[in-house]
Amino acid sequence: MTIIAVLGGTGSLGGALARRWAQAGHEVWIGSRDAAKAEAAAAAMLEEAPGLNIHGAALGDAAARAQIVVLAVPYASQVPTVEAIRGHVGGKIVIDTTAPLKPPKVGTVQLPAAGCAAVEVQALLGDEAIVASAMQTVSAEKLSHAEHIEADVLVAADKKDIADTVIALIADLGLRGYHAGPLANSAASEALTSVLIQLNRRYFSHAGIRITGAPKGDKPAAKTVQIIPVQGLPLFKSGDDLAAAITFALRAQGELLYEGDVLVVAQKIISKAEGRAVRLADITPSDEAQALAAAGGKHPAVAELILRESAAIMRAKPGVIIARHNLGTVAANAGIDASNVDSEDSETVLLWPENPDASAATLRATLKATYGADIAVIISDSLGRAWRLGTTGTAIGTAGIAPLTDRRGETDLYGRTLQATIIARADELAAAASLVIGEAAEATPVAIIRNAPYVRADAEGIGASLRPASEDLFP
Image (tube, rainbow, N blue to C red; front, side, top):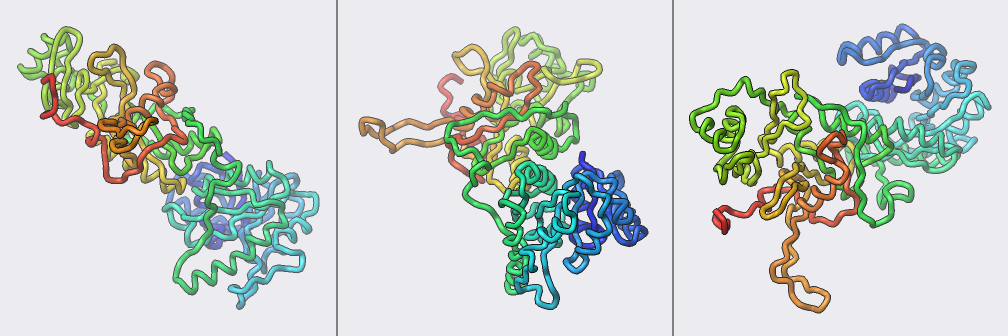
């Protein structure tokens, strides 16, 4: 948590910034020349969203309480605002969002004599504070809405560590920031504000800028496939927001999601969040379940759940029941598992998600919006394989990826045409991710696979990889 003072937080831009940072878990102080007005603005936000750590104060008081100070005032108010906080920002970072707009010609670039507004702020503060510049190209209108913003942010700062600090705060707004060079380069961002105003007027839009082409220092340039564990995730329970937790964990380890990344998520945390844990004491076994339990050496309540989750029972012998799940996958015990399921009475099991493809699609849509990157999501579980001992990670739900890669018709090294080569790509990636996800006490249920080859697909789910029952040679 960072303590942030947003000076001008009663305005449209400052209010949107204050709200978003408070929602991200920071302590926010709205600063205004009128302390009562600032307090009223904070109270209004608290009424809308109780529990936010947000307050109001006079400019100097807000700046004094903060670790980071943000100037979100009109250009005409910049100098008096800076003068009001002198003596309260010693050694702090001051983020200047000011664009030098001079009404009525706000659609015309009018940079000040110093070159840009941010340099003017640094001159006014001298050695008391370190000034960075950001946010001139993102509209208050966009920031005031909860949805993802299709825009990136240029950060101008004389030192990389200062830029990195600002970029981290920008990530908490749901945006990507890029270090655009020294503070003087803020002239480009400030000038762009007038250009974007012209675009918005002409095309009735809320234009922004996007950085394309994976700048150096952003996405790793190496094409080597990488498997990156997402660490620090909590022990999930019913109703938890998986996307928010994953985003928070990625932010904590300084990681982002990039175009083409594959996020592999263990089935257990999906099932926990979706409330698929079942207490065996709540299940009344049928006569059929009692018979199946005797044949498979299972708890009768577990046998009842297997029957409910299955389209057919394939085989049963002491220690194992092989079933064709309602979703089509053949698995031991219909995927029902008690490992890594926390329960007061220990008699609780976890069922698969009702629709793993839909679960993957929902998670993908949220993370895609958060990071502005087209990613794929695989929900995986550890399954056994016919004629093999042991388990391996297997995809049970997908979104954004074709589970199969059909290479029939391509040629091999010697020019021969491939006749039957269909790659189970989603299963391969799920198995690769299991190297870091683990099955015991690793507590790492999510992994990113980067630079993996796969075919993107929005409509296909895991069903495309299931062999039809009519083709089963061993019924």
